[in-house]
Amino acid sequence: MPFETISVIGLGYIGLPTAAVLASRKKRVIGVDINQKAVDTINRGEIHIIEPDLDIVVRSVVSEGYLRATTAAEPADAFLIAVPTPFKGDHEPDLSYIEAAARTIAPVLQAGNLVILESTSPVGATEQMAAWLADARPDLTFPQTHGEEADIHIAYCPERVLPGHVLRELVQNDRVIGGLTAKSSEMAVKLYELFVQGETIITNARTAEMCKLTENSFRDVNIAFANELSIICDKLDINVWELIRLANRHPRVNILQPGPGVGGHCIAVDPWFIVSKTPDEARLIRTAREVNDSKPEWVITKVKLAVAEFLQANPRKTARDVTIACFGLAFKADIDDLRESPALAITQKIATTHPGAVLAVEPNIEELPSNLVEKLYLASMESALAEADIALILVDHKPFKEFAWTLLENTSIVDCRGIQVG
Ligand code: SAJ
Image (cartoon, rainbow, N blue to C red):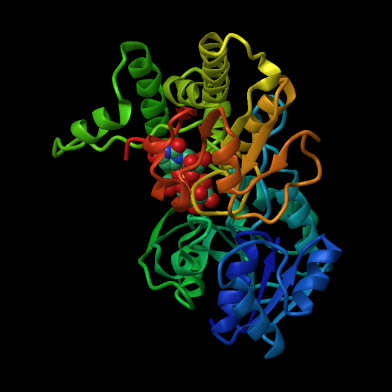
């Protein structure tokens, strides 16, 4: 079954690159998003998100007429849903965007269509989406009632791309595909084979859903192990980065790196989808989340201690005289994305509570977001290094890694990334 027209619902960090890559394979792609501004931006051949090289691809596929964005669903051969799945206050997954997407496409569905859910989702979400679609279109048949004979084919296929490398990983990564029926899986494989060079591996929908959650929970648990080690080592006066380097020389040990906490849009969220489904069983996964979530507070306490030590060594000064420079605001190295960033949260908290000057150094941005504490201001690396009494290293950006921190004489360093010692 050739897919001539493909609709991508949700034109964010996953949907837009996916739509652009499909369009670059000369498919007619209709991108649907509720955000009129995003739709207008894309139709001008521009992008509203940050991702290397995506602007070039979007400009070319829009100008060639392969990609078009709209706020209203239109008929297509396949629908790919890539909308957010945040959690609510109590860490319960919020499926309202998936429900809204399902209700948006339902009126234009036709027999023979394939619907794929890509959003990171709790186990059972694909079946739930199928139920919403069936509810809205009683005139069509769906896999949950008609199996292989159904009019509409439904599959789950999680996105697994790394922000900053999306265009490469979209093409190269393997894809796990979980159809509600064998036919759904086969159709989904055909769709992904349009642009995926990695392997397309078939399983069922629940396993595919759990696979994505498992990948990010695995990383979260392993980062939590590193973060816990860093706190233990601090107490025992051991350099945790040296320790990890040494332990990793064992052929079966591969410990990740401690940091100021876990940020980003996925790893700090997805494990909760497992915990909320199986709260009594998911003990380690929940604890890892708690360990990682508590790391920013620990860092703030370390900075307070550094200020106290500085004042002890400089008895004529008060806290108001102490300048703290925070190096890095992004959620990880060498990107400019400040959303869900523990580095930003820590810097904000320090700026709110510390009576002296607080400088932020973030080489990847031109200006600070407008909603930050007023007294915080963006400084160049050079001026911050010249002014800081306390340097807090929060992100291992390249220019920070290249600097010889050990040469700083009068600055006390709180290093969350282990770059000071190299
Ligand atoms: N971090 C550490 N120590 C480490 C590694 C990471 O503290 O050793 C921190 C980072 O600083 C950052 C956070 O963890 O704050 C997350 O960064 P990341 O690079 O681990 O992951 P993301 O959020 O950019 O992307 C992840 C990826 N998942 C895995 O590697 C298993 C990506 O493949 C997924 O597609 C993405 O989540 C997603 O969309 O789910």
